[in-house]
Length: 101
Image (cartoon, rainbow, N blue to C red; front, side):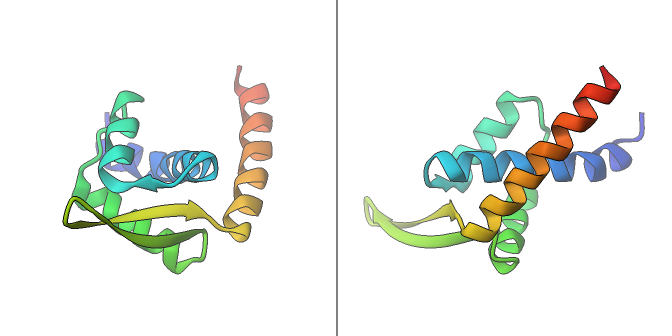
């Protein structure tokens, strides 16, 4: 199996997953990494953090820096734009799911 092709395909799923959790509550990188790994995504911090930064740059997520035990932790929450994208992605994913199952 071609892992490079799968990684490109799963990137969209990962972003939807991030938006979903950022809508429920603020997320941070190490938690999100564990969450994705629990769902079978083989992803490293070196892959996740650029995704989060790009989603912030695209105004899908908003970052807040919080001091936690003397260290700065970056929390991400969904933006209104991110919520709109998530709603559209859910609708498209549902249509795809109906078609392929």
